[in-house]
Image (cartoon, rainbow, N blue to C red; front, side, top):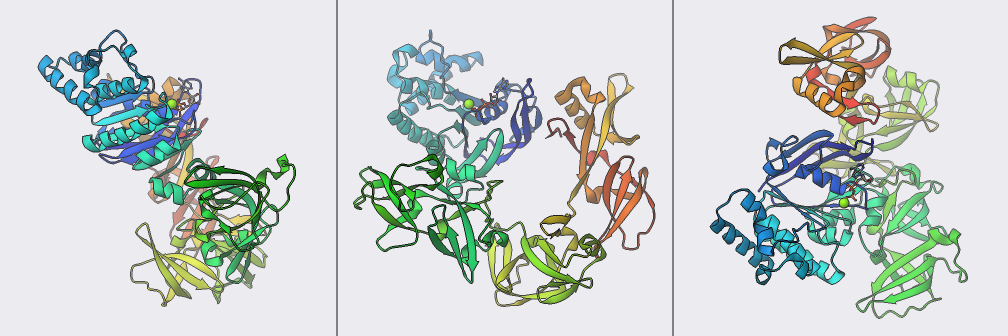
Length: 622
Ligand code: ADP
Ligand code: MG
């Protein structure tokens, strides 16, 4: 039994190929985790790093509380099962299963007990004297499982163990492995490219693509709340339908316009959490709707399709068509109009029919056309508010708000601005007041919907805030993004900063070294563990290279001796004040006191707080 933790794990192969990027997960004891994704996305590489069969380029791997990056595979208490079974052909099933235990010098009697127990569990008792070649694929895979089982591992790793089996056997083994997991009550990590396997077996699923984790979630959440178009399309059969659409808001309704000119209507409330600029009737977004969430309507609707194939599956019926009511040859340019509908058996649909459709508004997914990331987040990253600016004041939430100097300067003589307000930037205060329409619990947080004219401002609020109340609040001006005519004129102040510098090793005494970071000619103490990590990842060329050192802005110690900077500019946000320093050839934004007004500052940094980033392929070393 064991928990696992992967923290900022990277794999860069010798040839420079970045196979796994910043993989992070906390796996609890007894979980059944599935890694799923198309071939080449880094599933096996990650699994092999956990097993210790592949070096970890950067990051920390914990089994239980132990850091195991450098631990030998045999000491990790992990058993691995491969697609290829990897059985010894000249040995009997019994000997194959006993092999590892004999290597560990377990008494023969005890081995016998364990092998028999495992054989019984896997239903292969009668084959114990056979050689693998006299067995079917399914039986061989059971032997491979048995060989893993007898070792009582803390963690089971399975790499596409069922891929060599036919469909029927695969389905059967699927349930058996699930049962085995329940019986053994150990942690399983299971790799597959098959989303059905993933969905039916995993307690949580990691969806991967091109070396990047796309989403880690329960099967139901992946299905209901896919983070991006890739996950949405990968999970579920037949695949989710995707259409390029435009959205137009009118009052409390939003009209969706499909590529053929068909339309359907959803409530404004169902899409209000997205950036409202997408509701302008012009911007193209991607709509996703699963085949099972489209219904054939007995009434005429504004959304129709022409049927070009029907599949009767006995219990359900899959209708293939294209949006619109034109028959005739299907051309490439119509591809964006393909639609698949899953309906119950018994409906009368034939090729050439025009069918009318209804979609469930709570099943509609919307994705950004460029990034393909969902446009509707449970906690919106920000609410965009359009504001008129006049005489140093902004019309905001029914008030004429006096803007702090940093914003006024960024706005210049603009008379209109778009202000993006993250929910956490709405804080208790007296500047504004809005009515609370409702308070929603999301991930243990309170998300308040504040009525702002015919829109909502989303805010994270304390427990005491109730629907119907009038909420007084202020804004954290340093956390807002300001745009004028589509251009960003002021970015929010982030939590971290970075400076670039070199890295060196110093021989302190015989057999004793210490490491230093050097930023703009100033040496800073580097933790020994970090020093060894950088050297392990990069080899001795690390002493000739520059790294990016990332730190929390709050950790900059102003006024202390060490580095120094020339003040280029001061940003006054009212409650907060920042100074932009030039430190040698680099820039650094630091938080300063309200009465700050000098032209030069000394500051210190603590190398213990640094994250170290490799610059060429941009990964976090430690
Ligand atoms: P998956 O198991 O998801 O199919 P892998 O983890 O096997 O993917 O591979 C991930 C990526 O790393 C692929 O692009 C693959 O070609 C590459 N890769 C795997 N092994 C090596 C290696 N030894 N050297 C270089 N590249 C490799
Ligand atoms: Mg693989």
